[in-house]
Length: 230
Image (tube, rainbow, N blue to C red; front, side, top):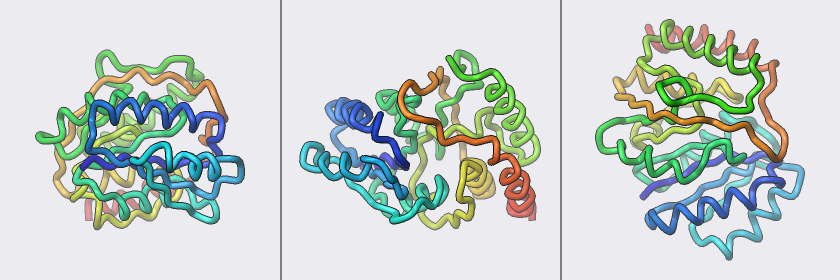
């Protein structure tokens, strides 16, 4: 089974479209569950998900009563996923669900397959330039600092061998969770594959990314240095 783990926080504007796209995917890949972690949403996200359960039999929902952050939502999803393959992606449609088919082609060869913005033929469209350059700089530093042979470490669109995630202790609560997962996988000797993706900036709803996450990356980065090398 393939478990698609998707955190959702105040995504009422885009969730109906996202669920329709996942439904198209299940027409092609029947052995799929969609596990949405409603991370304390305060808009219509809970109602949309509740109403969708009858329409979409592949949908499961787990709710955090309060917002705990991306890292906590992913940790909840990993612990509750039933599949032997776990897919993570955003619910804002910047990650096209049908692209999952390209990623899972590699699942029998690699432990982690990444939809990568920074390999040949990958990229970003309609994303502010300062965010692009900040991301490129951070990913370059992370790849060198932690000796991870991946150009897009912080991509949130990945396919994993579920066995490598189930017992993983995740401490990060925010966006730096992507780095923490990759460091832990590298520590375990995981194999990686990057598949090019052109990410298009979201057209509905508001981004949850904030420049305030940078200090969290710095403190998390030092902790993960010890995890990686000691």
